Length: 392
Image (cartoon, rainbow, N blue to C red; front, side, top):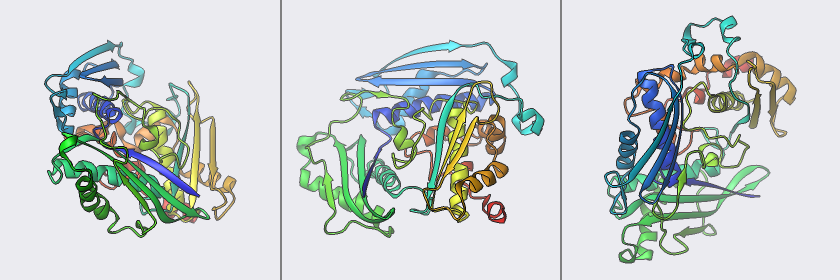
């Protein structure tokens, strides 16, 4: 079997929208941890549209935040930059709902059991032992390569690169174990493409991006690995050439299509949205199950309904890799993990994280994946339930 996953750089138009949306969420929560906010963003050539529904007394300048994100990512070309792009916003202020303005860290178990989900969703969490971060290898490598592609641009190692880029990694499997890198494709947008020799670009990307990432990997490209860098000629990227939208890169945000995900956007939502935080809780449970050695692969499914506190459906699949029957792992998981909305918020303290990170918290998650991150201290990536699960 050959499995391929995609990742994109922070300058991809969809990821630009995700980062703007989550920057808005961060700034609401910094001022008001009880803020309810839903932010959507769309971008096209020289124009950005921001739609925000919120219930909070916090003051947030949406246009200012969008321009900061554009500038930080590095869009400074004549056709799209933080100074000249037009920004339209459609804010809708909602009345404060005092039922939502509670400090979950002070809630008793009985109180938590009274906080129901406000939307319906079926979502999934996944983990496997293919990497140290317990992520599928294709998306792990794709995210590392796309991040490195941005780093060599920011560090002026390859100063002619533009912010938008794409990566695909194809991994060959034998009996569900990765055995070799089958193929690798990198699409890098460059300034003045006619002035950059394609062969020199390919060699530079190999030397500064591909080789450093694979230096410490157990599975590396070999003589038969097909490596393509801008195979269709100069890559025309950025909002000038294709539009962007919040939540359109769910596979990049999660497991690279190796495992299921809800399809709902993770970005642009405050922590009372169960379609966001439930995905974090499901990943936390799946990762601890694999880390505890109960399975080599684990998928956790949670379904929530409006007005119901607990998941209406909770299932576990280990795809034949479990050390005990799936139903027993499910029962063990249900006893040891919190899947109620307020319980997840209390355990992860999600509404208070932005105020502790001046550089932004959810905004940083909006590029290079919400799971398997080693550059951030994410509560849902901890494996602190291993001993409890092993004890049964």
